[in-house]
Image (tube, rainbow, N blue to C red):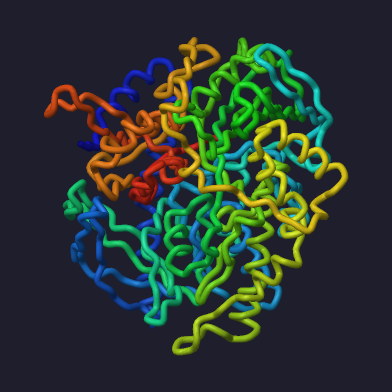
Length: 632
């Protein structure tokens, strides 16, 4: 049996109120997100009216909503929804999407012409759903804004020293620093603040930026090409019935649609399957990054210091590592990345992160400090061999949606921004220079974007490191990976006539519980380590209670029928937000039911990736819902 309920979340929020220093800040962010959601919808309506007054194309379509249970899918006809026409529609207001939008407007300004660009972002405000380490390379930023320092970009702390350490349970052993992890010239930043700044710059250039607006559907033309997207209906209750506040979604059509949803986008995953953008047998592989932001004792703070770790708390068969970045103002960003191709169903990435903080190297730094923020998100780790085809009739994939993260570098922001710039250059040429995409003409096929990618630094660096991540799948585990990585990084640099492949998708790597022993994790101490609900309260996550559950089950029985007996219910361990539980079934004494606490969700997408039954489908809730990250 399955049930979705807000009970646990509501309780956790009340319990956390007294023990979370930043709760008032989070509550203010939530209120702000709701205000922005209302304002953003009003802004869309204003633009719609302006288009109508200017006699620009405006058409009406009937909105169709899908029921929660895919196995019993029904279609409910809603009110007609209206359409706005743009030259470029960009789905996702992160580094890739905003860089593309900015570049398009800069090119138009340079030639004194117009190109209409819209960016929609599901987060309550630009940057609210952005989470990263982050230590970033500034090349693409300088390409967009050579005077970014003078313009006040929030890059305040240069990286000054690099350290690599192998951790045992009680010791930290220095290791040679891999050359690709050299951070000279890079900056330690809050990526959410950088993205917020990029959003402001995009608006200054004339981009229509709509936060708190969730894209829930791809609109296709009759020939199968992409026409644009539709935003989800607002004011729908749990049973998919309109409430008094019901507002139908809108369709945003473009000559091109740029998908910049980030890792494992809810639209992109379906697009890749529908248009067969990935070769048979190829797949993406992922990691889960869990992060906290701390304010530490000034005496322990070394601005610009970077530490990366391997080893403890992960075993030799589990890929991953830790990071500690000393930011400005006595702040430290630290976290643990766990490869989601791990085998042990008893492994909890969240609790492994708590063990990481208990290591003397980390705990000594954190003692006397206070945690400010918590968050988690999935990361693309597959590399060059996992990339899908980047273009298709009517659109392209950019940023983490495509999978441009350089795993050995532990960086993806620079490649995401660069891909946005490359896509913008190709799109501008097609639409403005060549005049393609006019009504009644063939859909634009932006093959020039993939060609530009193959001639770019993105391709060069991904090709060079393509064999490092899959090398950790030998029988030697982490030791084999370390040996090959050292050899490849120092000497070979990717110059071999072969490419290692990832063995299986992440969900298929999990082994039955009978093959493993439960892991005895220590209880949190409330000072350095914390229970999961306390951490969730620090994300500011919030979802309207009476709306369709955005975590959809294809089969409501599989979790209890298969995942519980075979894998001992791994959902309750791989989720870093306490969304999933197996609880006593009141209707069937002696049995369990599967409970989804959807209000806890912090939009990391791990469940959609790691569920061994591939039964959970992560979809977008109402725009503006989810985490409200601050300074992450």
